[in-house]
Length: 602
Ligand SMILES: [Zn+2]
Image (cartoon, rainbow, N blue to C red; front, side, top):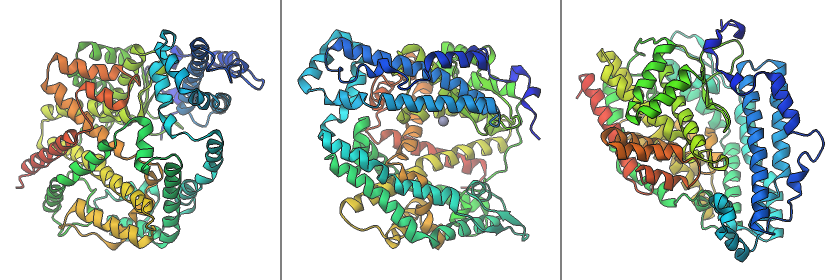
């Protein structure tokens, strides 16, 4: 039973008092920042219709908007952190809802801003962009107006905006059926024991050492989706049609281009990823073969792909030792980085360490420009918890360095870069732990964890990315998406990724119908590119010298001051080429070989 928060020593809690001494101080700042009358920020609205008057006016409007957003994000951070300490506490819930409502109003009252910026005539705007007054905001403005060539007339834009709500129906309906309406049957284990199957318990049962439970879990979950294949196909089709409608209306050549162009991500990044993985698929097949030999249960089925090859090595680390080893592991990043992290952990108390009653589960790194980069954890001394700490510390140091070296409007890093710094630090920790591992069991456990991480993030997400691209290309050619077409292609993909040795049960054909990410508009490839970039950079830093380290640190300090692909390029990795992905697969291959050796299997 988890303890009450009042029983947790303050030393083990994050120091949110450095943000506001208490809720009363927060309330005072809230009243000062968020007027209760509507419109809440008339001074912001006073710039409406005036942005093109002069560079000075535009600058003043931008600064006002950024200042407000900065103050709101500070208020948000505190309310959000306090809320997650005990999610049932009314006072915190009220504060949290108040700041969410204020945010909503802020976005409403500033929603005119970007469209007005986009409407400024080209000749005026290019003069503005050359003016020294706007120099600190030049890249921000360029980013905002990047989509200008794909904007429609005033009337056209209004029409698209009005269609927007209707076009959300497929993803909302999918979420409703998937998260709320669907109830799954109970599944039997080998002894005939009954288990409640939910989307949450699926992840546990599919890793269980009881093969009967794994099999029933896999088959019954997918059979449920299979029975609704017509509805689920129409929902996915609706979503894809919405992307086609948007891409065509805005004169993009394809849905892929429409999704990547605003972020200035070259389509080559997407295609190189898929090509590199396909060119090296034999490495994944070798892993399947190794699993088959180790598990020794005859031919493997897809539901045998998740069970750990070695029970969790029984290493328990008290929290303080976890901090110490994470600090030690970042030595390749230099003393300055290491000292900042040590100070964050030991003096500034970034981390809320242990579980308490009604605390939010899981782990995250969160904060704002004017706060510490806090970390929420539910530390249980297991090895995976130590890796979670390393992961979140990677995010937090990225935030800290970007906030310290960039002005507010360039302080946050974009999604494309988000998982690079965290995965990088996990890799450093893995290197250290493998060096230190005392027993064979420990080494096998660590290597297998890394292999599974790469399989789930690099191979599986690329398979999703390939499927996502294919359904969009089909629709662009007016080929109707039917359950049979989708299932056949999905089986073919599974066959290609897992190879000929594995049994692909019929139920697997329905998996496409349960993946929420297919509703996100070309999102998943970023998991695969992120882990590839992180591995390439970690390798470069560990093998390199001062220059390579400084290149990497410059990436951590860059926030969103340039486009993500350009930031990575300066750090030493070019995601337009297939090289980083090929190298990551090479790493996967050498881990598989290493695991085979440790297990004494050729
Ligand atoms: Zn993360």
